[in-house]
Amino acid sequence: MAKLKTSGIDRTFWALADPTRRGVLQRLMVEPGLSVSDLAGRFSLKLPGMTKHLDVLSDAGLITRTKTGRTVAVNLSAAPMREAMTWLNQYERFWAVSLDRLVALVEEDGEQ
Amino acid sequence: MAKLKTSGIDRTFWALADPTRRGVLQRLMVEPGLSVSDLAGRFSLKLPGMTKHLDVLSDAGLITRTKTGRTVAVNLSAAPMREAMTWLNQYERFWAVSLDRLVALVEEDGEQ
DNA sequence: TTTAAGCTTCGCCATGTAGCGAAGTGTTTA
DNA sequence: TAAACACTTCGCTACATGGCGAAGCTTAAA
Image (cartoon, rainbow over the protein chains, first blue to last red):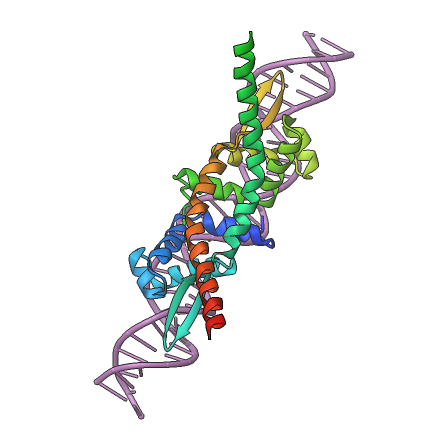
């Protein structure tokens, strides 16, 4: 089916689902402002391939590209990650409940 | 290219990238143990479609399927979410730094 | 003013995904 | 025992993805 990826969080999780793209983000934390060629080299990709990955990342708002002369510097822009965190945080309640149940079971055992 | 999805976190983010699958997870938080037919109905899908989504979710370890008689009860199993959270948490350092910079700039402005 | 460098866009290919209906498997009900 | 039910698997279609080389565009260097 057509991947519309209309929602922001769709795009965020989709961007994060690829190991190369997660690698790019981690690399950029260590070395901000790397060029597209630098990144392509580090991940053994040709320029068109890296450009496509960067398109996905910037569509998700996870990076920014700044052109200076003929080179493009890539930088992190982590705001959407926060959105993803927020989504995942819903589940902390679930984890907490699971833990509570476990604790309750253990305590019941103790009371018997 | 082939989506190998070897790594666990690949599968987790991949599973979360689809709005239907995120919807299923949210639904299961409210109503644990729904059947496959129930879920298919709620998301206007036929059974084969829902089965495929549930395959993706259970490959990622996000749900469990328990067959009782001829019906299958689906339940959350949130452990891999924690892994995803851990990955995203790396970026808190980055956010913190960004915020520090912002604060520093504001303070510099104040001192001028 | 050519030539080269850095990216992006354009085709192209091979593969994967999401959906469906039809058929298959096992379980319950009549 | 036959029929209905709950799923899963199979085969299919339509489309998206990730990679590449070639071509195009803009900027820097010769």
